[in-house]
Length: 142
Image (tube, rainbow, N blue to C red; front, side):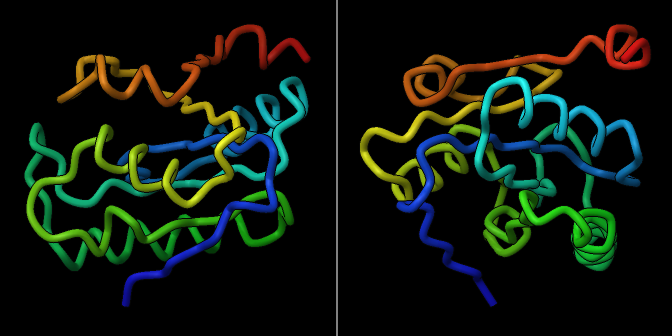
């Protein structure tokens, strides 16, 4: 089952990607802070599928996806995508961002919160997104 979501109704989206093993309050707080501070309309959580730098078990991948759904369900601005979970083969951020960007309006601005910037095709990814990071010490003070 590959969920195809149309993001053309949004002007600004953010993508929060990671293994989410497990997803925790820090992920949710960071995503909400970015949403509020940057005026983001929709935050799309993308649990990693089969990243090239880690071993992955398909059952565990499905569990991580479901944990992410349960953790985000109460925030109407959050959504969880299966885009990497359902992809066959290795999953790279550049492919995910390219596909998500294809589903957006041409003038949509997208951002991705990503700690590890050493990813396959990083230069191509930067053409599509504005990268933002979170300083957890500053989030704790708020």
